[in-house]
Amino acid sequence: MIQSTAFNYIDVLDKAADASWRREDLLSNNIANVDTPGYKRKDLDFEGTLREELKNYQYRSLDSKVNSADLNRLNPNVYRDYANLSYRLDGNNVDIDTESVELASEQLKYMGLTTSISSEFSRMRDVIK
Image 1: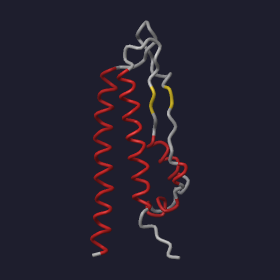
Image 2: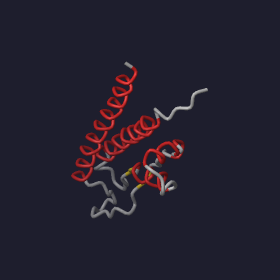
Image 3: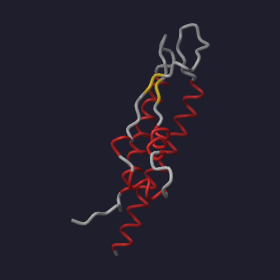
């Protein structure tokens, strides 16, 4: 059987796109609950999860790190943000302006990730030709 690492970057990009999609959903949910008393915003941190996984291979090249990364550990957990102080009397800590900016940023990130995945497949197709 032929061992290939050709899809490792695509697999990592796929995990990042999945996390970005999931974060967009969380941010949209936060915006929808901006007026819900006591609601605490939810978020996830894929970049931190990826950083921790790649740190395990700290003295290697990026290619080697990606090839060695355990994709099963690239699943960030959703957390409730209790640290974000609430200045509202109802205890809700969602700031609509911050959430809107984060959502727009995450949408751009997702578009960039899907473009990168598409580019990787285009490069593979060009090599095969």
